[in-house]
Image (tube, rainbow, N blue to C red; front, side, top):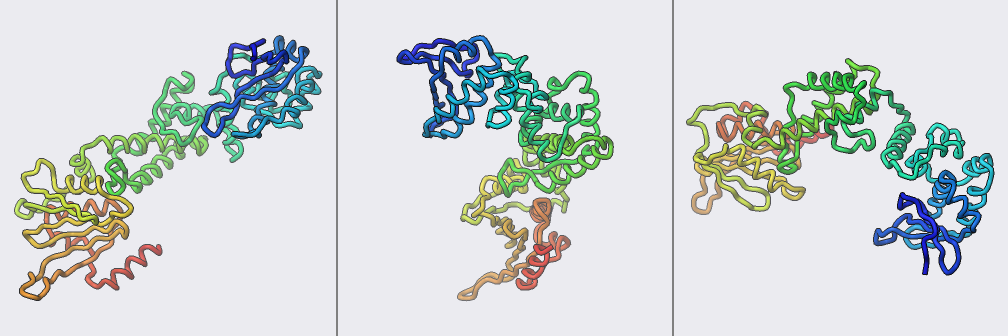
Length: 420
């Protein structure tokens, strides 16, 4: 049976309880194997309780020093109570200079103190008691997160200037560089916002007219990595040229913002509009357009398209690919059964084959299907060839080679490309 003797407004700061007549400090820290918070307790004296009641700074310092012991206990281990008790007198009852000296020798949770208002400069200089003069019971978790983010940057040699920090706050990436960026003007100090907007405007001008298309080979919402890299390189160069004082983190977050927004615009665009925007809509005359096509994948699934379909053949095909493509399903075929011609896309090899029926099989003789192969330059190349075929057929592909009928020759060409 235990009774709470002393507690503070913040529920996570350790409480003092009386258990079977004995005073104990109790705190929640870490988690067990089921991810539930663990609770640790160890004995204290009346003298320790008196300091804890009256001195928030010493209370927080003790908490900061005990937390690493809780971490060491892991998910199932016991708290080293002897080590915890050994911290009581040196932290709660010793002179400030002695407390400062102790914190030079032990592990302690710096972020916890910063969240509760510790002066970061004094902490860094080892003056922990002085740093806690402005301590608050209510924590500011974001302050500690920003401190740790700055420490991580400092470890790789990056120090943010005021504009760098403002840009990272604007994109929401100050704390975590992997966060999807977005525009957050309210997060920036008003005095710095015009400068941030000028940097963003530089980036927008640099990538005006550029787009990031979709890459159905990786799913219906996947986007073209080459387009992304091209836009990223363009924006980086323009921002560095116009604002040479920015650190890499600030430049990268701006290009990440531009690319993310372009990718989102592409994902929300219907497949037909995406095809038009990609520019693969050469016209080969109405008579050359296909009347009916069959799409198949490497798993044997088939989908039909006819000219009276409300959607274009290319859009229907790429949606089929986006729904079906996978690591074990990387070969897709478009066939015009009436004309006896088709193309087969090999995503695993960045190549394509065009096939036509030269002679139908008669009796016991097999049909003759000449096959030509060509290398393909990414999803953009595939889009172009698919558009050419569905609009102009086998013959229209001739000018988009070179095409190789010799398999050995084609394999040598593919190995040379892959070796570059």
